Length: 341
Image 1 (cartoon, rainbow, N blue to C red):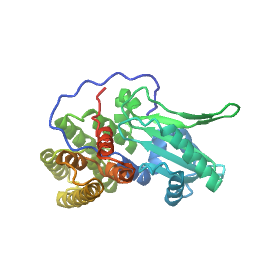
Image 2 (cartoon, rainbow, N blue to C red):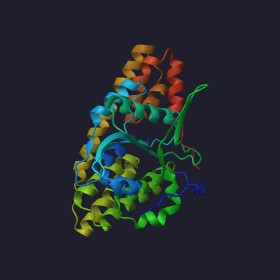
Image 3 (cartoon, rainbow, N blue to C red):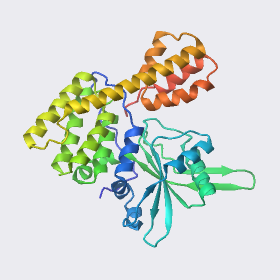
Image 4 (cartoon, rainbow, N blue to C red):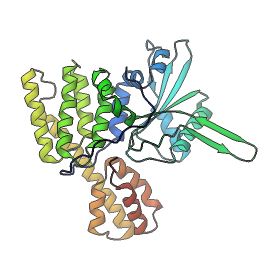
């Protein structure tokens, strides 16, 4: 089992510049893999909690309850959040609130948001909550783990558990030896951060990480699920994506493992997702034109570079904009390039 360390990590070697691939999507893939492989998630990141859960009893994802609480809190729904009902070995029922902050920028409002969600859940459902936070950003020194609310004679302190993904950089050998699916997920996340400006390296890492699951003997469904995850997160330019697909096809033919050889099906699925994304882009652009008149072509191009998660956030923010300047400032903040450490 890979253990987290708290000391500062050395800076990774600078990546050579290459063709810039499409912007990576983080939130939705993490939410999907967390929900599908929840037991492995807890085993990898929180072995002490894993040991206390009665896995013979069903777990339950409380999506409706979480949506209600986050809506009432009026601070925005987070795609990578999960609220899960489990049973401890002593028979007690408990709820776990899991927040995966996997976008690659820090969010200074995070401690307040986790605190609000925690007390809202308890206030509404009278259930004790364990709050767990996964941080996927690239800032070594940003490690929020508490929130303090204080007035002259009253002080409230709320502590929560934080796991920092970049802490695993120094444990790469241990990650490679670990067969838990989330060791590969963490490796994928780190490689995605490191290859923002190196498309060729990203393609090579993408294939090696997928190949790793075949070599571990993961079953067909695991590999298909991970393929979708890695395809979503480790985005590539069209030409390199085609090369990657061919690598996968040739490897499966060699290994006689026709799990995802049907690249045509994958391509069709990718095409559908692209069509949905373009539809959402057009809808947002129409809303902007309606609100501010015809927006300029450079702003349109910036909108087209947004991920689906960012488009959703922009759709919410539009009605808070008073001028085009507000829109341009929002785009400047959300399209800020990732700084390599």
